[in-house]
Image (cartoon, helix red, strand yellow):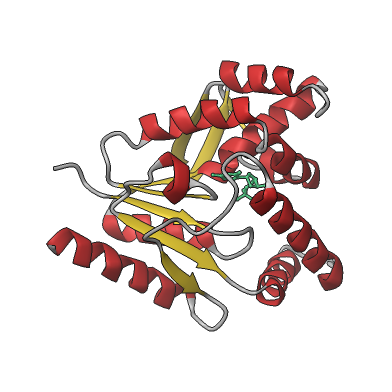
Length: 224
Ligand code: DC
């Protein structure tokens, strides 16, 4: 039997990346950040100067794009057509564009195909918005990770402070609300809790508690 697939979905800023990475580390599983893949397409569209008004061209960029992940000094890096774009996909422009880009059906089709291929041998923790609903509806472990807008905005502001950057918490909260609305109201694969997913509300939980909870669900499933 293949090792399980752990699907973690939830809105931006709920802490998915941190807990998914830690759970993958503890289990010796592969960690796949699917948001980074949508960001990669947004980055390539920006680089090519392709406007959002031309979704067919953006879908074409996605189809042609070679994406792979590589561990470098214990950090996961993402490469697009051989270029390390790990940092470039985190700019404000790439972040802003990634949401409308991820609403394009042709982009989703290509990235979902790639995600299924990457996880074909199991033993994967994959996080995103549609992993438990669309990419792997039969994943052995499904988690819907969330937190209030206030908690998510505060975490983001703390991160920026740590990086020595100033931030406006009201603006961050407004951006989060806007992204939530767009991600959960879009036509293709909107963000929602998958049937059978465990709901984890992280407002009053430490990262360790969340990771331990996910591993407990995984271990129970494996033992069953
Ligand atoms: O998780 P993130 O902020 O890096 O994701 C970037 C964008 O991609 C975000 O607007 C939601 C979208 N996304 C998606 O539609 N489906 C996924 N599986 C992952 C991310």
